[in-house]
Length: 183
Length: 183
Image 1 (cartoon, each protein chain N blue to C red):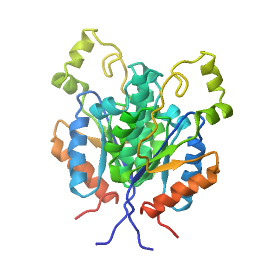
Image 2: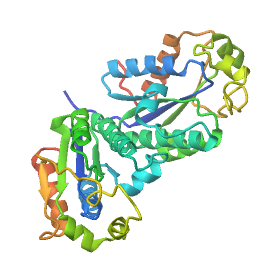
Image 3: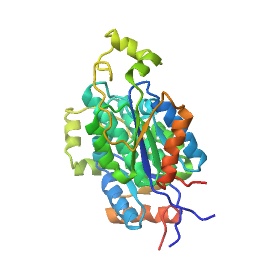
Image 4: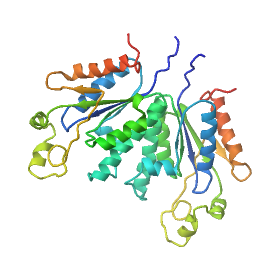
C-alpha cells in the first residue's frame, strides 16, 4: 500500500460554554480516527489535566492558555498531524494570533454558534446559574464578552442539527480540503 | 520521489544545569532539520515562553513541567514527528513516567553526564554561585538531588568530546535505529 503524506491541520472550535464544542470535537475526532489518521484532541479536560495547571481565570491567564494550546497545535501541524481544539477562546485577537502561528492554510476555525439563551437553558454544568448569582465572575457571555469570529471557515447550528450532523459536516470539509482521504 | 513514513521519536536530554544539554540539543536539531525532517525543540527558553508560565520551582511544579513537556512530546511522536527535549529533569520516577507515556520504542534518553565540578566551574549563568551563597534554594546538584539515569540509551561525555561530536553521535544513533534516513 502506498504511503500518502497528508498536510497537517488544526481544527479550532470556538463558542460559548455549553455551545456544544466538546461533543462536536469528540464526534469529529472519532470520524478522523476511523479514517485512519491519528488525532490530538484538546478539550477542557485534556487541557486542564496536561497543559493549564498553574493558570487562573484572569484575562491574561486565559490568553496564555489559548496561546499555549495554539503553540502545541502548531507543533503538531508542522509534523503533518491533526489537532482538534475545543476552547471558548472568546477574544478574536488571540484566536487570530493562533491562526497566524499555525498558518492560514492549515487553520480551520469552527464557530459553534449556539445562542446564549440556549446555552444558558442547557446549563449542563450549572455555571450560568452561578454566574448570574454572582458566585463566579468573568464568565463569558454573562459578565465577560464573547467576540464571534468574523470569517470562520465553518459556522455550526446546534439547534437545528445534531452533534453527529455537525461533526460530519466538519469532517466533510476536511476531506474536501485534502486534509483527510475520502472514500 | 516516494514518500517514506518514518516512526516518531522523542530524544530526551537530561543532566545538570550547565552540562551542555541545550547546545547539544541545538546541534542535534540542526542535523535532523538538514536531513529533511521537521523537529520540535523544547529547551529552557521555548518551555518558559510557551509552556511553563504559571509554574514555580517547588518539586510539584517542576514535576508538572517535566510531565507537560512529556505530554506534548508524546502527542508529536504519535503523529510520527521528532521532539528533542532538553530539561534538567532530575528525578528518575518522572523521567520514567514520560518514557512509559511516549512508549519505550520511541524514547531515547540521553544522559549528558558532565561532572558537577565541571558544570560549576563553567557556571555560565552564575546560578551555582548564587546557590552556594544561598541566594537561591532547591538548586539541582547543590541543595537538591540529581538522580542519574540507570539505563540511558546514550551517555555523553562533554569534557573529552565537542558539542558537534556529541550531536553527531546522537544523530548517528537515530539513523541506526531507523528514525532518520541515512545517506
